[in-house]
Length: 512
Image (cartoon, rainbow, N blue to C red):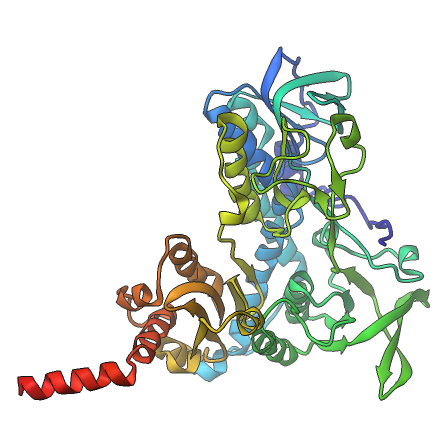
């Protein structure tokens, strides 16, 4: 069960600065002229985020007649309220962390002055620069009919947008998802923040409460703590980043503790209230068989506790499309129960990442337009949590490897064994690779730029690569990516069984 969100403002509407106005003019022009539907479209795409834009632009580039429907802003969450703005402010927060650690490198900074307004202004300016790539005019120039408004299925081959009826040969549902709030009494009565509103802030909260210790919660907790907020993270789990290996999450937690972040983990949120202008959260914790009550307060509260698919008002039943609480039900080829309609991205996938939506839409293009047989299960999809240090992962985890059969083995290289990490004073982290007789099956990297390192493993896994291949790959020295080569070397050493070693010993004795 979830409750509806009370937004402090709608995305990009709170601050009419030049950068925000520029984004709005690009991705939802006020003077946009609705096109006249022309005949039957080869592809109608519902949703103008990453999944929708990749589907529409790809199909149009192949010569298909395409219509794209977006109810709010082209670019979706990634551009407007997700990846782009969050990584922009995380970059500023990383700079603060680097300055605070500079003394260990022999560089003394007298003070670190933080202008939160300038940080947010820079974010909006960078977002405006990137918005050009998702602009309505660029999409129109690609030959796509762009309709702004809420879409609904009228039947198995027709979508209605306002007064326009769009008939299609194939359609793609790419409506994405939205943040949801846990069913905590009183939470719906306070003006809490989500990822859709926090980037509208111009004044730094002095005390920020964050519900959720997952990737979004941890990323923003660390950023705002470095900007100067007193941050408290609340979660019913006893650990942060619960989908990551426990020791990977522990590295991140140590870093967050150094940033002064407070944690209230293993707690149940009993109630949220406004008290004397503060947000007060009542907590319950089970200790030695008894329940203990406590409370925390703040100036603002951010909900970062999950997402739900955007399915409302689509009238899926009219098109014979099945759905669940998790989203649109699809086959491995991303086809819905209506063979004319496919789905891509957050609306149907457990991998709620921009790069996953992009990859899925490429599969949709082949399967929907050209009778392709590509499967989503064949994709090798990594993810990255952009804390400091970052955590990157692909494939099986340590817990999954332990539960699997005995053919899976694990190699771990600590960053303190890597020369570049040593000279950079960045030794708190590791590279861990799971393999089946050398064949790569999974990897976790904890490092300052783990996201830049994981791609090598993703490529190798997708092309049948092995740890021996990583060992044989010449990596520049000194780089932290050399940890991957060291993992390959470790595997090769482990492969030298006693019998093989005895054979080599006999060989060298014979050659002397």
